[in-house]
Image 1 (cartoon, rainbow, N blue to C red):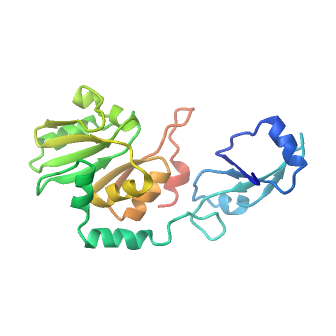
Image 2: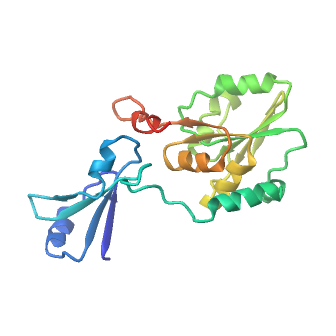
Length: 226
């Protein structure tokens, strides 16, 4: 290939880097984390020549200003969203996913990490006078509800507790994940990409950053954008 992308500071093998030094036609891009801090504008696009082998690495920083790498978004995404909502396509789409909530039941999506503190929140929903269905992504997110449900649900499974119905769905491709966000009245999202998609969905959402190796949460960079 003529372009190599190493995400989030991953190092290339020494053999590959040595080959890059002799191949100026190959572009090595270090795709960095999304950030709203000012230093991103100064570092985006800079080149770094590695003393050990002369390979050149270019930094790409997604961001929120013209000087950053910006955010890649489908050209017609917001128009698709508005049409989806105007046509009331959500009920039809939900049915294709095996989700058929009765009239008057509010929908909440839950895409979180396993350590998300959701048990007390789920217990409150179960006692609420308003029927609620929480749609949980299969895998890591379903682990977060194990303490409340007594088990980690798998795709297609559903349990009921009082006014609360918890339903697990399979992981979705990006277009379908957008449809899920558009269909719900509240979305719980995690990390970076789903956080951005939740913003573009135009729905109320709660964001869970991920925990760093030092025990802190990666929140400083993203929170500064609000």
